[in-house]
Length: 94
Image 1 (spheres, rainbow, N blue to C red):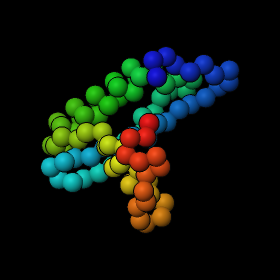
Image 2: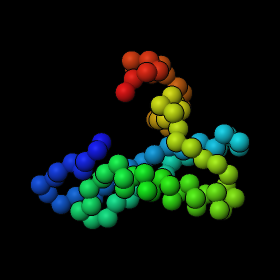
Image 3: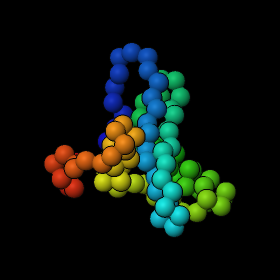
Image 4: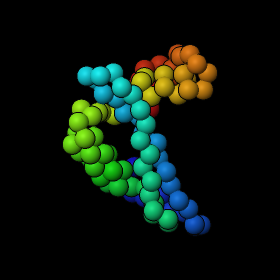
């Protein structure tokens, strides 16, 4: 996503991103909340993730990284059904 998507109506966006701490095994989600009428761009999302990374590190929470597609898929499956399933189109889906 190199440019913002144009919308012809008022909107507010929240984007959920899965993160993982390899040292502790902790997994979680962070929500990127954009302001009213702010459109998502790659730069805004990356800026939020950089800030989150720094905040967690300063708080002593260790190093978090973005979850892989497999880790995110498994988290969604477990949340919705309590178990995991094969990924659609295999590990390399995009």
